[in-house]
Length: 293
Length: 336
Image 1 (tube, rainbow over the protein chains, first blue to last red):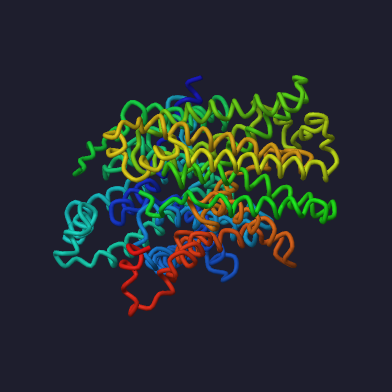
Image 2 (image 1 turned 90 degrees about the vertical axis):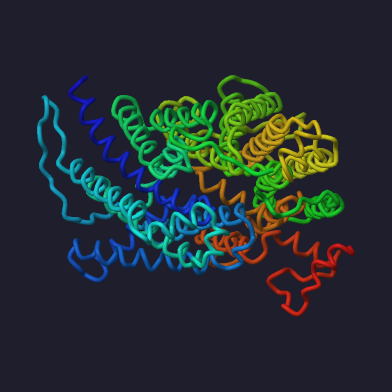
Protein backbone atom coordinates (compact mmCIF):
# COMPACT_ATOMS: atom_id res chain seq x y z
CA UNK A 1 0.00 0.00 0.00
CA UNK A 2 2.49 2.60 1.14
CA UNK A 3 4.67 1.92 -1.89
CA UNK A 4 1.88 3.41 -4.02
CA UNK A 5 0.61 6.06 -1.66
CA UNK A 6 3.74 8.23 -1.49
CA UNK A 7 4.34 8.52 -5.27
CA UNK A 8 0.63 9.12 -5.79
CA UNK A 9 0.71 11.93 -3.24
CA UNK A 10 3.91 13.46 -4.68
CA UNK A 11 2.67 13.44 -8.26
CA UNK A 12 -0.64 14.66 -6.82
CA UNK A 13 1.20 17.68 -5.45
CA UNK A 14 2.80 18.40 -8.82
CA UNK A 15 -0.42 18.08 -10.85
CA UNK A 16 -2.17 19.97 -8.04
CA UNK A 17 0.20 22.87 -8.63
CA UNK A 18 -0.70 22.70 -12.33
CA UNK A 19 -4.41 22.87 -11.44
CA UNK A 20 -3.48 25.73 -9.14
CA UNK A 21 -1.65 27.60 -11.93
CA UNK A 22 -4.59 27.14 -14.30
CA UNK A 23 -6.95 28.17 -11.51
CA UNK A 24 -4.80 31.19 -10.79
CA UNK A 25 -5.23 32.40 -14.37
CA UNK A 26 -9.00 31.99 -13.90
CA UNK A 27 -8.91 33.99 -10.64
CA UNK A 28 -6.77 36.77 -12.14
CA UNK A 29 -9.09 37.11 -15.14
CA UNK A 30 -12.08 37.13 -12.82
CA UNK A 31 -10.58 39.83 -10.64
CA UNK A 32 -9.28 42.04 -13.46
CA UNK A 33 -12.32 41.86 -15.73
CA UNK A 34 -15.19 40.30 -13.74
CA UNK A 35 -15.24 37.44 -16.26
CA UNK A 36 -15.26 33.82 -15.17
CA UNK A 37 -13.31 32.02 -17.88
CA UNK A 38 -14.36 28.46 -18.70
CA UNK A 39 -11.88 28.37 -21.58
CA UNK A 40 -8.51 28.16 -19.77
CA UNK A 41 -8.02 24.36 -19.96
CA UNK A 42 -8.83 24.27 -23.65
CA UNK A 43 -6.60 27.29 -24.26
CA UNK A 44 -3.84 25.26 -22.58
CA UNK A 45 -4.49 22.29 -24.88
CA UNK A 46 -4.67 24.53 -27.95
CA UNK A 47 -1.43 26.41 -27.23
CA UNK A 48 0.34 23.11 -26.51
CA UNK A 49 -0.61 22.04 -30.02
CA UNK A 50 0.75 25.34 -31.37
CA UNK A 51 4.08 24.70 -29.57
CA UNK A 52 4.09 21.20 -30.99
CA UNK A 53 3.60 22.59 -34.51
CA UNK A 54 6.60 24.90 -33.94
CA UNK A 55 8.53 21.67 -33.42
CA UNK A 56 7.00 19.42 -36.11
CA UNK A 57 6.22 21.94 -38.89
CA UNK A 58 9.01 24.50 -38.42
CA UNK A 59 11.60 21.89 -37.51
CA UNK A 60 12.80 23.75 -34.42
CA UNK A 61 14.48 21.83 -31.60
CA UNK A 62 11.84 20.90 -28.99
CA UNK A 63 13.22 23.31 -26.37
CA UNK A 64 13.12 26.32 -28.69
CA UNK A 65 9.70 25.23 -29.97
CA UNK A 66 8.41 25.57 -26.41
CA UNK A 67 9.90 29.07 -26.11
CA UNK A 68 8.40 30.14 -29.45
CA UNK A 69 5.14 28.48 -28.38
CA UNK A 70 5.00 30.72 -25.31
CA UNK A 71 5.41 33.81 -27.53
CA UNK A 72 2.67 32.52 -29.84
CA UNK A 73 0.49 31.91 -26.77
CA UNK A 74 0.95 35.52 -25.66
CA UNK A 75 -0.06 36.67 -29.15
CA UNK A 76 -3.09 34.35 -29.07
CA UNK A 77 -4.08 35.85 -25.71
CA UNK A 78 -4.00 39.34 -27.24
CA UNK A 79 -6.03 38.14 -30.23
CA UNK A 80 -8.60 36.55 -27.92
CA UNK A 81 -8.94 39.78 -25.96
CA UNK A 82 -9.29 41.99 -29.04
CA UNK A 83 -11.59 39.75 -31.08
CA UNK A 84 -13.68 38.05 -28.40
CA UNK A 85 -13.68 40.07 -25.20
CA UNK A 86 -13.08 43.70 -26.18
CA UNK A 87 -15.83 44.06 -28.78
CA UNK A 88 -19.11 45.16 -27.19
CA UNK A 89 -17.55 44.57 -23.74
CA UNK A 90 -20.33 46.47 -21.97
CA UNK A 91 -22.76 43.60 -22.56
CA UNK A 92 -22.51 42.39 -18.96
CA UNK A 93 -20.47 39.96 -16.90
CA UNK A 94 -22.72 36.99 -17.71
CA UNK A 95 -22.44 37.62 -21.42
CA UNK A 96 -18.64 37.76 -21.19
CA UNK A 97 -18.55 34.46 -19.28
CA UNK A 98 -20.81 32.90 -21.93
CA UNK A 99 -18.26 34.09 -24.51
CA UNK A 100 -15.49 32.13 -22.79
CA UNK A 101 -17.77 29.10 -22.90
CA UNK A 102 -18.21 29.61 -26.65
CA UNK A 103 -14.45 30.06 -26.94
CA UNK A 104 -14.02 26.76 -25.07
CA UNK A 105 -16.20 25.00 -27.59
CA UNK A 106 -14.67 26.78 -30.63
CA UNK A 107 -11.03 25.98 -29.74
CA UNK A 108 -11.98 22.40 -28.84
CA UNK A 109 -13.84 22.00 -32.14
CA UNK A 110 -10.95 23.41 -34.17
CA UNK A 111 -8.50 21.12 -32.38
CA UNK A 112 -10.60 17.96 -32.79
CA UNK A 113 -11.39 18.77 -36.43
CA UNK A 114 -7.93 19.70 -37.69
CA UNK A 115 -5.31 18.80 -35.07
CA UNK A 116 -6.45 15.47 -33.69
CA UNK A 117 -5.78 13.29 -36.75
CA UNK A 118 -3.18 10.70 -35.70
CA UNK A 119 -2.90 11.74 -32.06
CA UNK A 120 -1.33 11.36 -29.54
CA UNK A 121 1.79 13.01 -30.91
CA UNK A 122 5.24 12.62 -29.43
CA UNK A 123 6.78 15.98 -28.53
CA UNK A 124 10.28 15.39 -27.07
CA UNK A 125 10.26 18.30 -24.62
CA UNK A 126 13.56 18.14 -22.69
CA UNK A 127 12.68 16.41 -19.43
CA UNK A 128 14.54 14.11 -17.03
CA UNK A 129 13.68 10.45 -17.38
CA UNK A 130 15.30 9.06 -14.20
CA UNK A 131 13.68 8.39 -10.89
CA UNK A 132 14.62 8.32 -7.23
CA UNK A 133 13.65 5.84 -4.56
CA UNK A 134 12.38 7.40 -1.36
CA UNK A 135 11.36 5.19 1.54
CA UNK A 136 10.91 2.20 -0.74
CA UNK A 137 8.75 3.91 -3.36
CA UNK A 138 9.75 5.11 -6.81
CA UNK A 139 9.20 8.78 -7.66
CA UNK A 140 10.02 9.96 -11.20
CA UNK A 141 12.33 12.97 -11.49
CA UNK A 142 9.73 14.66 -13.65
CA UNK A 143 7.46 15.10 -10.63
CA UNK A 144 10.20 17.18 -9.01
CA UNK A 145 10.73 19.25 -12.16
CA UNK A 146 7.02 20.00 -12.38
CA UNK A 147 7.07 20.85 -8.69
CA UNK A 148 9.99 23.26 -9.13
CA UNK A 149 8.58 24.93 -12.25
CA UNK A 150 5.18 25.32 -10.65
CA UNK A 151 6.67 26.67 -7.41
CA UNK A 152 8.89 29.14 -9.28
CA UNK A 153 5.95 30.35 -11.38
CA UNK A 154 3.69 30.67 -8.33
CA UNK A 155 6.47 32.57 -6.56
CA UNK A 156 7.08 34.93 -9.50
CA UNK A 157 3.38 35.64 -9.85
CA UNK A 158 2.92 36.29 -6.12
CA UNK A 159 6.01 38.55 -5.98
CA UNK A 160 4.77 40.44 -9.04
CA UNK A 161 1.38 41.08 -7.52
CA UNK A 162 2.52 41.82 -4.01
CA UNK A 163 5.69 43.85 -4.37
CA UNK A 164 5.93 45.52 -7.79
CA UNK A 165 4.25 48.80 -8.80
CA UNK A 166 2.73 47.10 -11.86
CA UNK A 167 1.26 44.44 -9.63
CA UNK A 168 -0.34 47.23 -7.63
CA UNK A 169 -2.06 48.50 -10.82
CA UNK A 170 -3.50 45.03 -11.42
CA UNK A 171 -4.70 44.75 -7.84
CA UNK A 172 -6.30 48.19 -8.08
CA UNK A 173 -8.26 47.18 -11.19
CA UNK A 174 -9.22 43.91 -9.52
CA UNK A 175 -10.44 45.61 -6.35
CA UNK A 176 -12.56 48.24 -8.02
CA UNK A 177 -12.52 48.65 -11.75
CA UNK A 178 -14.47 51.91 -11.81
CA UNK A 179 -12.37 53.68 -9.17
CA UNK A 180 -9.19 52.43 -10.84
CA UNK A 181 -10.34 53.94 -14.13
CA UNK A 182 -11.16 57.23 -12.44
CA UNK A 183 -7.62 57.29 -11.05
CA UNK A 184 -6.28 57.04 -14.59
CA UNK A 185 -5.41 53.34 -14.82
CA UNK A 186 -6.02 52.00 -18.29
CA UNK A 187 -8.16 49.09 -17.17
CA UNK A 188 -8.72 47.67 -20.67
CA UNK A 189 -4.98 47.52 -21.25
CA UNK A 190 -4.62 45.73 -17.91
CA UNK A 191 -7.33 43.27 -18.96
CA UNK A 192 -5.53 42.64 -22.27
CA UNK A 193 -2.27 41.93 -20.42
CA UNK A 194 -4.12 39.59 -18.04
CA UNK A 195 -5.53 37.66 -21.01
CA UNK A 196 -2.04 37.37 -22.49
CA UNK A 197 -0.59 36.22 -19.17
CA UNK A 198 -3.48 33.80 -18.63
CA UNK A 199 -2.91 32.25 -22.04
CA UNK A 200 0.84 31.93 -21.41
CA UNK A 201 0.20 30.27 -18.03
CA UNK A 202 -2.25 27.87 -19.67
CA UNK A 203 0.40 27.06 -22.28
CA UNK A 204 3.01 26.34 -19.59
CA UNK A 205 0.56 24.04 -17.83
CA UNK A 206 -0.12 22.26 -21.12
CA UNK A 207 3.57 21.83 -21.96
CA UNK A 208 4.30 20.47 -18.48
CA UNK A 209 1.84 17.63 -19.12
CA UNK A 210 3.57 16.66 -22.39
CA UNK A 211 6.35 14.37 -21.02
CA UNK A 212 3.78 12.10 -19.33
CA UNK A 213 0.76 12.40 -21.59
CA UNK A 214 2.03 13.35 -25.09
CA UNK A 215 0.12 15.92 -27.16
CA UNK A 216 -3.55 15.13 -27.62
CA UNK A 217 -6.91 16.88 -27.50
CA UNK A 218 -7.96 14.78 -24.49
CA UNK A 219 -4.99 15.53 -22.24
CA UNK A 220 -6.46 18.51 -20.44
CA UNK A 221 -10.14 17.54 -20.55
CA UNK A 222 -10.24 16.65 -16.85
CA UNK A 223 -8.46 19.91 -16.02
CA UNK A 224 -11.69 21.74 -16.82
CA UNK A 225 -13.36 20.30 -13.73
CA UNK A 226 -10.21 20.02 -11.57
CA UNK A 227 -9.06 23.63 -12.09
CA UNK A 228 -12.58 25.02 -11.55
CA UNK A 229 -13.09 22.84 -8.47
CA UNK A 230 -9.73 24.03 -7.11
CA UNK A 231 -10.69 27.66 -7.65
CA UNK A 232 -13.99 27.33 -5.80
CA UNK A 233 -12.47 25.14 -3.08
CA UNK A 234 -9.84 27.77 -2.34
CA UNK A 235 -12.12 30.73 -2.92
CA UNK A 236 -12.60 32.77 -6.06
CA UNK A 237 -11.73 36.02 -4.29
CA UNK A 238 -8.40 34.91 -2.79
CA UNK A 239 -5.14 35.23 -4.73
CA UNK A 240 -3.61 32.12 -3.18
CA UNK A 241 -6.90 30.22 -2.94
CA UNK A 242 -6.51 28.57 -6.35
CA UNK A 243 -3.19 27.00 -5.28
CA UNK A 244 -4.56 25.68 -1.99
CA UNK A 245 -7.65 24.32 -3.73
CA UNK A 246 -5.61 22.95 -6.63
CA UNK A 247 -3.27 21.11 -4.26
CA UNK A 248 -6.18 19.50 -2.40
CA UNK A 249 -7.84 18.51 -5.69
CA UNK A 250 -4.55 17.22 -7.11
CA UNK A 251 -3.68 15.02 -4.14
CA UNK A 252 -7.19 13.65 -3.59
CA UNK A 253 -7.84 12.97 -7.29
CA UNK A 254 -4.44 11.38 -7.84
CA UNK A 255 -4.82 9.00 -4.89
CA UNK A 256 -8.33 8.06 -6.06
CA UNK A 257 -6.98 7.59 -9.58
CA UNK A 258 -4.18 5.26 -8.43
CA UNK A 259 -6.31 3.19 -6.06
CA UNK A 260 -9.70 3.18 -7.83
CA UNK A 261 -10.31 4.72 -11.24
CA UNK A 262 -10.62 7.91 -13.25
CA UNK A 263 -14.38 8.16 -12.71
CA UNK A 264 -13.93 7.78 -8.96
CA UNK A 265 -11.37 10.61 -9.00
CA UNK A 266 -13.69 12.95 -10.91
CA UNK A 267 -16.64 11.92 -8.72
CA UNK A 268 -14.81 12.55 -5.44
CA UNK A 269 -13.58 15.97 -6.56
CA UNK A 270 -17.12 16.90 -7.59
CA UNK A 271 -18.49 15.69 -4.22
CA UNK A 272 -15.90 17.80 -2.38
CA UNK A 273 -16.91 20.77 -4.53
CA UNK A 274 -20.61 20.25 -3.68
CA UNK A 275 -19.87 19.92 0.05
CA UNK A 276 -17.66 23.03 0.12
CA UNK A 277 -20.25 25.06 -1.79
CA UNK A 278 -22.94 23.96 0.64
CA UNK A 279 -20.99 24.44 3.87
CA UNK A 280 -18.73 27.35 2.96
CA UNK A 281 -19.75 28.92 -0.38
CA UNK A 282 -16.94 31.49 -0.36
CA UNK A 283 -14.25 28.77 -0.31
CA UNK A 284 -11.54 27.99 2.22
CA UNK A 285 -9.61 31.26 1.89
CA UNK A 286 -12.30 33.42 0.32
CA UNK A 287 -13.51 36.54 2.08
CA UNK A 288 -17.15 37.21 2.86
CA UNK A 289 -18.67 39.07 -0.06
CA UNK A 290 -19.87 42.51 0.96
CA UNK A 291 -22.55 43.99 -1.26
CA UNK A 292 -24.22 47.34 -1.14
CA UNK A 293 -27.94 47.01 -1.41
CA UNK B 1 -26.36 38.89 -13.77
CA UNK B 2 -28.22 38.40 -17.01
CA UNK B 3 -28.82 41.68 -18.76
CA UNK B 4 -31.04 40.21 -21.46
CA UNK B 5 -34.70 40.66 -20.52
CA UNK B 6 -37.00 37.62 -20.68
CA UNK B 7 -40.11 37.68 -22.85
CA UNK B 8 -43.47 36.17 -22.02
CA UNK B 9 -45.51 37.10 -25.09
CA UNK B 10 -43.87 34.70 -27.55
CA UNK B 11 -46.49 31.94 -27.36
CA UNK B 12 -47.82 32.54 -30.90
CA UNK B 13 -44.35 32.26 -32.44
CA UNK B 14 -43.56 28.96 -30.71
CA UNK B 15 -46.88 27.42 -31.74
CA UNK B 16 -46.30 28.62 -35.31
CA UNK B 17 -42.93 26.82 -35.34
CA UNK B 18 -44.46 23.61 -33.96
CA UNK B 19 -47.20 23.91 -36.60
CA UNK B 20 -44.55 24.15 -39.34
CA UNK B 21 -42.89 21.02 -37.96
CA UNK B 22 -46.27 19.25 -37.92
CA UNK B 23 -46.98 20.27 -41.53
CA UNK B 24 -43.61 18.78 -42.53
CA UNK B 25 -44.73 15.42 -41.14
CA UNK B 26 -46.48 14.07 -44.26
CA UNK B 27 -44.17 16.00 -46.63
CA UNK B 28 -40.69 14.79 -45.67
CA UNK B 29 -39.09 11.50 -46.67
CA UNK B 30 -38.07 9.08 -43.92
CA UNK B 31 -34.39 10.11 -44.09
CA UNK B 32 -35.25 13.77 -43.56
CA UNK B 33 -37.75 12.85 -40.86
CA UNK B 34 -34.96 11.18 -38.89
CA UNK B 35 -32.71 14.26 -39.18
CA UNK B 36 -35.43 16.77 -38.26
CA UNK B 37 -36.55 14.42 -35.47
CA UNK B 38 -33.15 14.71 -33.79
CA UNK B 39 -33.42 18.50 -34.07
CA UNK B 40 -36.78 18.26 -32.26
CA UNK B 41 -35.04 16.37 -29.43
CA UNK B 42 -32.43 19.12 -29.18
CA UNK B 43 -35.20 21.73 -29.20
CA UNK B 44 -36.81 20.10 -26.14
CA UNK B 45 -33.48 20.07 -24.30
CA UNK B 46 -32.86 23.69 -25.33
CA UNK B 47 -36.26 24.86 -24.03
CA UNK B 48 -35.21 23.40 -20.67
CA UNK B 49 -31.94 25.35 -20.70
CA UNK B 50 -33.89 28.50 -21.55
CA UNK B 51 -36.28 28.15 -18.61
CA UNK B 52 -33.49 28.01 -16.03
CA UNK B 53 -31.13 30.41 -17.86
CA UNK B 54 -33.41 32.94 -19.47
CA UNK B 55 -36.28 33.08 -16.98
CA UNK B 56 -34.83 32.14 -13.59
CA UNK B 57 -31.38 33.56 -14.39
CA UNK B 58 -29.54 30.35 -13.44
CA UNK B 59 -27.41 29.24 -16.40
CA UNK B 60 -27.42 25.51 -17.17
CA UNK B 61 -24.09 24.64 -18.81
CA UNK B 62 -24.48 20.90 -18.22
CA UNK B 63 -27.51 19.81 -20.22
CA UNK B 64 -25.45 16.97 -21.79
CA UNK B 65 -25.33 15.29 -18.36
CA UNK B 66 -29.13 15.13 -18.18
CA UNK B 67 -29.44 14.13 -21.82
CA UNK B 68 -27.06 11.23 -21.21
CA UNK B 69 -28.92 10.28 -18.04
CA UNK B 70 -32.28 10.34 -19.82
CA UNK B 71 -30.97 8.25 -22.71
CA UNK B 72 -29.07 5.62 -20.70
CA UNK B 73 -31.62 5.34 -17.90
CA UNK B 74 -34.50 4.81 -20.34
CA UNK B 75 -32.53 2.23 -22.32
CA UNK B 76 -31.45 0.40 -19.16
CA UNK B 77 -34.90 0.41 -17.52
CA UNK B 78 -36.48 -0.93 -20.70
CA UNK B 79 -33.84 -3.38 -21.92
CA UNK B 80 -32.64 -4.78 -18.61
CA UNK B 81 -35.42 -4.15 -16.12
CA UNK B 82 -38.17 -4.87 -18.63
CA UNK B 83 -40.29 -1.79 -18.00
CA UNK B 84 -42.60 -0.59 -20.75
CA UNK B 85 -41.30 2.44 -22.64
CA UNK B 86 -43.56 5.09 -21.14
CA UNK B 87 -42.84 3.87 -17.61
CA UNK B 88 -39.08 3.73 -18.29
CA UNK B 89 -39.22 7.25 -19.72
CA UNK B 90 -41.16 8.54 -16.73
CA UNK B 91 -38.76 6.92 -14.25
CA UNK B 92 -35.68 8.32 -15.97
CA UNK B 93 -37.20 11.81 -16.03
CA UNK B 94 -37.79 11.44 -12.29
CA UNK B 95 -34.11 10.45 -11.89
CA UNK B 96 -33.09 13.61 -13.81
CA UNK B 97 -35.28 15.78 -11.58
CA UNK B 98 -33.85 14.20 -8.42
CA UNK B 99 -30.28 14.76 -9.60
CA UNK B 100 -31.13 18.37 -10.40
CA UNK B 101 -32.46 18.96 -6.88
CA UNK B 102 -29.32 17.49 -5.25
CA UNK B 103 -27.03 19.62 -7.45
CA UNK B 104 -29.23 22.64 -7.00
CA UNK B 105 -29.04 22.49 -3.21
CA UNK B 106 -25.30 23.21 -3.48
CA UNK B 107 -25.54 25.56 -6.45
CA UNK B 108 -28.04 27.94 -4.84
CA UNK B 109 -25.41 28.85 -2.26
CA UNK B 110 -23.21 30.52 -4.90
CA UNK B 111 -24.30 33.88 -6.24
CA UNK B 112 -24.38 34.71 -9.94
CA UNK B 113 -22.87 31.87 -11.94
CA UNK B 114 -23.28 29.18 -9.26
CA UNK B 115 -25.52 27.00 -11.40
CA UNK B 116 -23.25 27.55 -14.38
CA UNK B 117 -20.20 26.24 -12.53
CA UNK B 118 -21.88 23.27 -10.86
CA UNK B 119 -23.65 22.15 -14.03
CA UNK B 120 -20.51 22.61 -16.17
CA UNK B 121 -18.52 20.42 -13.76
CA UNK B 122 -21.39 17.92 -13.60
CA UNK B 123 -21.27 17.43 -17.37
CA UNK B 124 -17.68 16.23 -16.96
CA UNK B 125 -18.58 13.97 -14.03
CA UNK B 126 -21.36 12.22 -15.95
CA UNK B 127 -19.12 11.93 -19.03
CA UNK B 128 -16.36 10.32 -16.93
CA UNK B 129 -18.78 7.84 -15.31
CA UNK B 130 -20.46 6.96 -18.59
CA UNK B 131 -17.07 6.39 -20.27
CA UNK B 132 -15.58 4.54 -17.30
CA UNK B 133 -15.80 0.86 -16.55
CA UNK B 134 -17.82 1.00 -13.32
CA UNK B 135 -21.19 1.35 -15.06
CA UNK B 136 -20.57 -1.00 -17.99
CA UNK B 137 -23.71 -2.99 -17.13
CA UNK B 138 -25.77 0.13 -17.90
CA UNK B 139 -23.69 1.84 -20.60
CA UNK B 140 -22.61 -1.30 -22.43
CA UNK B 141 -18.95 -0.24 -22.66
CA UNK B 142 -17.50 1.71 -25.61
CA UNK B 143 -20.00 0.23 -28.09
CA UNK B 144 -22.98 1.47 -26.13
CA UNK B 145 -26.42 -0.11 -25.89
CA UNK B 146 -29.36 -0.31 -28.29
CA UNK B 147 -31.73 2.58 -27.73
CA UNK B 148 -35.13 1.98 -26.16
CA UNK B 149 -37.67 1.23 -28.84
CA UNK B 150 -40.94 -0.52 -29.36
CA UNK B 151 -44.32 0.88 -28.54
CA UNK B 152 -45.42 4.06 -26.80
CA UNK B 153 -49.15 3.84 -26.06
CA UNK B 154 -49.62 1.46 -28.98
CA UNK B 155 -47.63 3.55 -31.48
CA UNK B 156 -44.74 1.66 -33.10
CA UNK B 157 -41.69 3.90 -32.70
CA UNK B 158 -39.40 1.80 -34.91
CA UNK B 159 -41.17 3.45 -37.85
CA UNK B 160 -39.40 6.84 -38.32
CA UNK B 161 -42.65 8.52 -39.38
CA UNK B 162 -44.37 7.54 -36.14
CA UNK B 163 -41.32 8.54 -34.09
CA UNK B 164 -41.28 11.97 -35.72
CA UNK B 165 -44.97 12.46 -34.98
CA UNK B 166 -44.51 11.51 -31.34
CA UNK B 167 -41.47 13.80 -31.05
CA UNK B 168 -43.37 16.79 -32.42
CA UNK B 169 -46.31 16.11 -30.08
CA UNK B 170 -43.88 15.93 -27.15
CA UNK B 171 -42.27 19.21 -28.28
CA UNK B 172 -45.72 20.81 -28.42
CA UNK B 173 -46.47 19.59 -24.88
CA UNK B 174 -43.13 20.83 -23.54
CA UNK B 175 -43.60 24.21 -25.26
CA UNK B 176 -47.13 24.51 -23.85
CA UNK B 177 -45.90 23.63 -20.35
CA UNK B 178 -42.98 26.06 -20.64
CA UNK B 179 -45.19 28.95 -21.77
CA UNK B 180 -47.74 28.21 -19.07
CA UNK B 181 -44.96 27.96 -16.48
CA UNK B 182 -43.47 31.38 -17.29
CA UNK B 183 -46.92 32.97 -17.36
CA UNK B 184 -47.86 31.46 -14.00
CA UNK B 185 -47.27 32.67 -10.45
CA UNK B 186 -44.07 30.56 -10.34
CA UNK B 187 -42.94 32.10 -13.62
CA UNK B 188 -43.37 35.63 -12.33
CA UNK B 189 -41.46 34.63 -9.21
CA UNK B 190 -38.68 33.28 -11.46
CA UNK B 191 -38.47 36.60 -13.32
CA UNK B 192 -38.30 38.47 -10.01
CA UNK B 193 -35.49 36.22 -8.79
CA UNK B 194 -33.64 36.80 -12.06
CA UNK B 195 -34.06 40.56 -11.69
CA UNK B 196 -32.96 40.81 -8.06
CA UNK B 197 -32.89 38.04 -5.50
CA UNK B 198 -33.14 40.39 -2.54
CA UNK B 199 -36.18 42.16 -3.94
CA UNK B 200 -37.74 38.75 -4.54
CA UNK B 201 -37.10 37.68 -0.94
CA UNK B 202 -38.57 40.96 0.34
CA UNK B 203 -41.69 40.29 -1.74
CA UNK B 204 -42.05 36.90 -0.08
CA UNK B 205 -40.62 34.74 -2.86
CA UNK B 206 -38.41 31.90 -1.66
CA UNK B 207 -35.61 32.37 -4.16
CA UNK B 208 -33.80 29.07 -3.63
CA UNK B 209 -37.00 27.06 -4.00
CA UNK B 210 -37.85 28.90 -7.23
CA UNK B 211 -34.33 28.32 -8.60
CA UNK B 212 -34.55 24.60 -7.75
CA UNK B 213 -37.91 24.25 -9.50
CA UNK B 214 -36.67 26.00 -12.65
CA UNK B 215 -33.55 23.83 -12.67
CA UNK B 216 -35.55 20.61 -12.16
CA UNK B 217 -37.80 21.55 -15.10
CA UNK B 218 -34.65 22.18 -17.13
CA UNK B 219 -33.18 18.78 -16.22
CA UNK B 220 -36.40 16.93 -17.07
CA UNK B 221 -36.47 18.57 -20.51
CA UNK B 222 -32.83 17.52 -20.97
CA UNK B 223 -33.63 13.91 -20.07
CA UNK B 224 -36.60 13.80 -22.44
CA UNK B 225 -34.60 15.37 -25.28
CA UNK B 226 -31.72 12.96 -24.71
CA UNK B 227 -34.01 9.92 -24.72
CA UNK B 228 -35.69 11.07 -27.96
CA UNK B 229 -32.31 11.67 -29.65
CA UNK B 230 -31.18 8.18 -28.58
CA UNK B 231 -34.37 6.59 -29.92
CA UNK B 232 -33.89 8.43 -33.23
CA UNK B 233 -30.29 7.25 -33.52
CA UNK B 234 -31.23 3.67 -32.63
CA UNK B 235 -28.38 3.32 -30.13
CA UNK B 236 -26.64 5.32 -27.43
CA UNK B 237 -22.90 5.18 -26.73
CA UNK B 238 -20.73 6.82 -24.07
CA UNK B 239 -19.53 9.21 -26.78
CA UNK B 240 -23.08 10.32 -27.66
CA UNK B 241 -23.28 13.14 -25.10
CA UNK B 242 -19.81 14.58 -24.34
CA UNK B 243 -19.65 17.83 -22.28
CA UNK B 244 -19.27 19.81 -25.52
CA UNK B 245 -22.92 18.96 -26.30
CA UNK B 246 -23.92 21.12 -23.30
CA UNK B 247 -22.21 24.08 -24.89
CA UNK B 248 -23.90 23.34 -28.22
CA UNK B 249 -27.34 23.24 -26.58
CA UNK B 250 -26.55 26.47 -24.74
CA UNK B 251 -25.46 27.90 -28.08
CA UNK B 252 -28.86 26.98 -29.56
CA UNK B 253 -30.52 29.00 -26.80
CA UNK B 254 -28.16 31.96 -27.23
CA UNK B 255 -28.52 31.97 -31.02
CA UNK B 256 -32.33 31.95 -30.95
CA UNK B 257 -32.60 34.26 -27.97
CA UNK B 258 -32.23 33.70 -24.23
CA UNK B 259 -35.56 34.03 -22.45
CA UNK B 260 -37.92 33.58 -25.40
CA UNK B 261 -38.77 29.79 -25.55
CA UNK B 262 -39.28 30.27 -29.31
CA UNK B 263 -35.63 31.14 -29.80
CA UNK B 264 -34.21 27.84 -28.51
CA UNK B 265 -36.47 25.90 -30.92
CA UNK B 266 -35.27 28.09 -33.80
CA UNK B 267 -31.67 27.73 -32.65
CA UNK B 268 -31.93 23.94 -32.41
CA UNK B 269 -33.32 23.75 -35.94
CA UNK B 270 -30.58 26.03 -37.29
CA UNK B 271 -27.66 24.32 -35.51
CA UNK B 272 -28.80 20.82 -36.39
CA UNK B 273 -30.26 21.28 -39.88
CA UNK B 274 -27.78 23.68 -41.53
CA UNK B 275 -24.66 21.48 -41.02
CA UNK B 276 -26.67 18.40 -42.03
CA UNK B 277 -27.87 19.87 -45.31
CA UNK B 278 -25.14 22.34 -46.30
CA UNK B 279 -22.59 20.52 -48.49
CA UNK B 280 -19.12 20.10 -47.00
CA UNK B 281 -20.15 21.36 -43.59
CA UNK B 282 -21.02 18.08 -41.91
CA UNK B 283 -17.49 17.19 -40.84
CA UNK B 284 -16.96 20.70 -39.53
CA UNK B 285 -20.30 20.90 -37.71
CA UNK B 286 -18.80 21.57 -34.28
CA UNK B 287 -16.59 24.39 -35.58
CA UNK B 288 -19.53 25.95 -37.43
CA UNK B 289 -21.79 25.81 -34.38
CA UNK B 290 -19.17 27.20 -31.98
CA UNK B 291 -18.13 30.02 -34.30
CA UNK B 292 -21.72 31.19 -34.83
CA UNK B 293 -22.40 30.86 -31.08
CA UNK B 294 -19.44 33.13 -30.31
CA UNK B 295 -20.32 35.74 -32.92
CA UNK B 296 -23.95 35.86 -31.75
CA UNK B 297 -22.86 36.42 -28.15
CA UNK B 298 -20.63 39.30 -29.23
CA UNK B 299 -22.85 41.17 -31.69
CA UNK B 300 -26.38 40.41 -30.49
CA UNK B 301 -26.58 39.28 -26.86
CA UNK B 302 -30.39 39.03 -27.10
CA UNK B 303 -30.14 36.44 -29.89
CA UNK B 304 -31.80 36.36 -33.31
CA UNK B 305 -35.38 36.19 -32.04
CA UNK B 306 -34.71 38.93 -29.49
CA UNK B 307 -33.19 41.21 -32.13
CA UNK B 308 -36.03 40.55 -34.57
CA UNK B 309 -38.68 41.15 -31.91
CA UNK B 310 -37.01 44.42 -30.92
CA UNK B 311 -36.91 45.47 -34.54
CA UNK B 312 -40.59 44.69 -35.10
CA UNK B 313 -42.05 45.98 -31.89
CA UNK B 314 -39.96 49.03 -31.19
CA UNK B 315 -38.71 49.79 -34.69
CA UNK B 316 -35.28 49.83 -33.12
CA UNK B 317 -32.14 48.53 -34.77
CA UNK B 318 -29.91 46.25 -32.69
CA UNK B 319 -27.20 48.17 -30.84
CA UNK B 320 -24.42 47.12 -33.15
CA UNK B 321 -26.20 48.45 -36.26
CA UNK B 322 -27.47 51.68 -34.73
CA UNK B 323 -25.78 54.87 -35.83
CA UNK B 324 -24.43 57.04 -33.02
CA UNK B 325 -26.70 59.87 -34.21
CA UNK B 326 -29.79 57.91 -33.17
CA UNK B 327 -29.08 58.23 -29.48
CA UNK B 328 -32.78 58.63 -28.72
CA UNK B 329 -33.00 54.88 -28.38
CA UNK B 330 -33.52 55.12 -24.62
CA UNK B 331 -36.43 57.47 -25.13
CA UNK B 332 -37.88 55.19 -27.81
CA UNK B 333 -37.85 52.32 -25.43
CA UNK B 334 -39.63 54.27 -22.72
CA UNK B 335 -42.30 55.35 -25.18
CA UNK B 336 -42.91 51.79 -26.38
